[in-house]
Image 1 (spheres, rainbow, N blue to C red):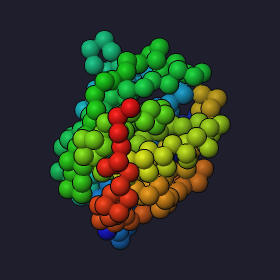
Image 2 (image 1 turned 180 degrees about the vertical axis):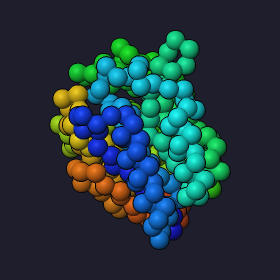
Image 3 (image 1 turned 120 degrees about the horizontal axis):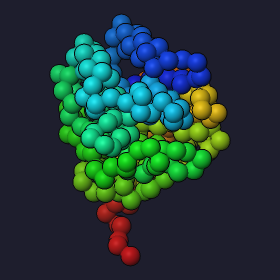
Image 4 (image 1 turned 60 degrees about the vertical axis):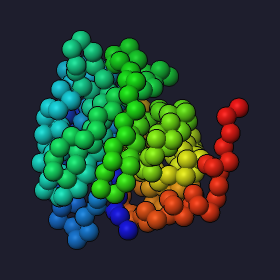
Amino acid sequence: MIRFTSVQLAGEEGVTHDQRMQKAEACLEKIYAGEERPVQILFPEIWATGFFNFDNYYTESEEALGATYEMMSSWAKKIGCYIHTGSLVAKDGDHYYNTALLIDPNGKCVGKYRKTHLFSFKSREPELLTGGFNTCIVDTEYGRVGLATCYDLRFPEQFRIMMNLGVEYFLICSAWGAARTGHWRLFNQARAVENQCFLVSCDGVGTHGGVTLAGHSMIIDPWGEIIAEAGETEQILSAEVDPGLIIDNRNNFSALKDKRLV
């Protein structure tokens, strides 16, 4: 059995970037002090700035391997686990990207994903940021993982590509709006069950930029069953999963073997 943890943080109004960083560290300290440490920790999308705080994107941007990475890297080594940093606004030359990092237990960045599908509905993300075109797949000590971010969940082709490349676990950071909570729960389960993979997501909560986030971070098995689900407030969500369920599911239900191109 392996243990996953999603740190569901709030991005409420009136809280600064530095205060959010301090809150994240307090959560990591709590995990470190616990009796059961996870193999993988996840954070939400653009949690330190607040996804809908668009006016702060450029002023609070950083290099991909900047302050957030350095902080998370030290905690990955201290706890002895993988950390998905959630995403941040990362500057590269004249472009800014919604960038998520995967850090290994030695503190090394082993995966960098730039969000592919930028959210255009009542959002300035496509105006301010550049979309990525990279598929991020990483071989970890517990299996092959694929990274995706929030709105990507609405595009199943991206997940099928990762599954075809051997991914067993999808890691999703998000800032999904509460107005579409039903869609969030649906897509989390659908992307897991249609690819016969585990899916672990970490969504934000709170209200900022006039938008309330959904929460409901999830840990879902290859049958699409919800192993654990958070509520709508700040929460550290943890659950153990059985890696053998991937092979068992794929061997006993042949959906992937039966697929045909049409």
